[in-house]
Image (cartoon, rainbow, N blue to C red):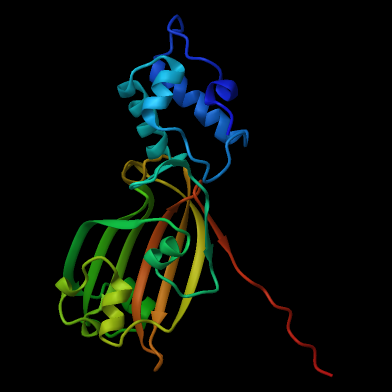
Length: 250
């Protein structure tokens, strides 16, 4: 990779824009113009500070902002990289953690809420459950390499888990241990605009475009055990599906 200063120019102290914002703007434009490619590694912070004649604190502030915007991602022990868009195969029933690990990313979650209750009228209708059916609800923020990727709300029938505490990091792993991991699912994808709360959690702006994926997961016997609504950042996710032509009758 050429020196970044050759791609984005120098940082000018006479410019009215703060130094860290100048570096941010230059890197952002280089990424948007494809001068920097997905998964390109950036030089260490000390090298960037020396190259642009600015402090490491200024470099760190610039990079932190781009990480929160989803342009860069940090990989523990490896450094800072240009974020690549994640492709989610819509035809495979996998968890978020499995998707990220398969792509060499490090997944983690921040739990926003875990609760016990009974199905709401909407859940009862969607999952085909009787009123009063016990459920567990899980609300969490999903990260890949410390970049916020998705906001997830999930309802699971209570009989599928020994307790709400059984889910530590991976819901599907906990369901698999009890033999209740979904084997089939129906998914619906639609475009949404983030409200203020969603945008703040995902490091986006209110009104930014996002993707809402609704999933109903079923056991082999046809019972619905999972209903989830996941809000994905539209600038970091691509959904793909393999399509096959139907065989014509001869």
